[in-house]
Image: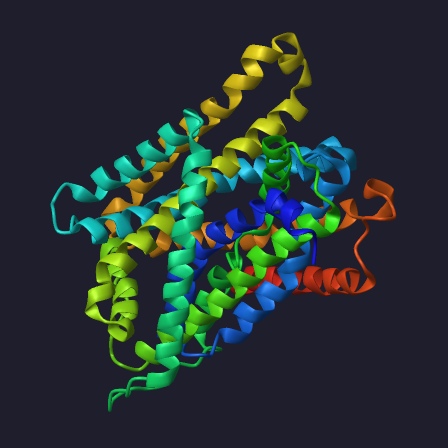
Length: 424
C-alpha cells in the first residue's frame, strides 16, 4: 500500500475514469444487457473489462514514467500515428458526446419531471450542454470534480445496497408466455458489439487517463511514484468493473422475462433505471437515486467534453507546432475553449438531427460500434509505447500484463473482424 498522504495527492484521475465509465456503459448498456438477455451476455462484459484493462493502464503508466501524455507518445511512433489518432477522434467525438449528452438530458428530464412537455427534449439538451460548456470554459471544473466524487460515493453505496437487496429477494417471476432469448442469436449478436464497445469505455479514451494524470501533477505539485498512480487507476477501474456486474444483475433479476421492455425515449429509460433502485430500496429513495443518477451522468458528460477538449488541444499543438510557437500565449490558451465550443455546437446539432427517431439507442449504438472498431489500433499503439525503449526498464509492465495485452489485441481484433464480416 502506498503512503497514505502521498496517495491522496495522486488520487483523482482514476476516480474521474470510473465516473466516465459508469455513465452510458453501466446505467444504459449493462442494464439493457441484463433486461434483454439475463446473464447471457455477462461473459462479454467480463472479457471486455479484462482484455481492455492493460491499454487503459498504459495511459496512466506512460504519463507517470515520462511526465507527458500518451498522445505525445503517438508522435514518437510517427506523425502518421498522431494523425490517425487525431482523425479518429474527430470522426467519433460528436457521436460519443451526443450519446452521453442525450442520456444525461434524459436523466435530467426524469429528475425534474420534464419528459412530457412538448418543447422539453431539446431544451433540456441545450441546457445540459450549455452548462457543461460554461463550467469547462470558465475553468470551474475542479469544484464540480469534487462534488461529483461525493455524488459518485452516494451512487456507489446506493447501487451496492440495491444489488444486495436484489440478490436477497431473488429474481422476479417470468411471464407464462416468456421465451428465453438466445444471446447467440441475431438480437444478441447485434447488441454484442455496442455492449463491448464501451465496456468499461472506449479504448481511445485511454489518452484521457494520461492527460488527467499530468493535470493532477500540475494541480498538486507532487510527482507520484508509479505504484501510487497505478493504485489510483486500479481503484477506479476495479470499482467500475464491479458496478457493471451489479447493473447486469439488477436488469436480469428485475426485468428479464417479466414482459417489461426498456423504453426507447431517454427520459422514460432514465425513469426505468431509477425504478430499479426504488423497487428494492423503497419509494422513499426515489429523489435521492434520481438526483444521484443524474449527477453522475452529468459528471460523465462534463468529463467526456473535458477529455475531448484536452485531447484535441494537445494533438493540435503537436501537429501544428509552428502555429503555437508564433503566438504561444494567445493561441495555445484559446484552443481548449475553442474546441469545447465546437464540441458543444456539433453535439447539439447531431442530437437534433436524431431527435425525430425517438430512440436515443441509435446514437449510443453508433458511438459504441465506432469505438470498438478502432480499439485494436489504439491498443497496439499503447502497448508499443510502454516498452523499455519509450519509458525505461523500471516502468515497463510485468510479463503477465504483456501476455494479457497480446490476448487483448487478439480479442479486440477478432470481434472487430467478425462484426465487419457479419455486417457486409
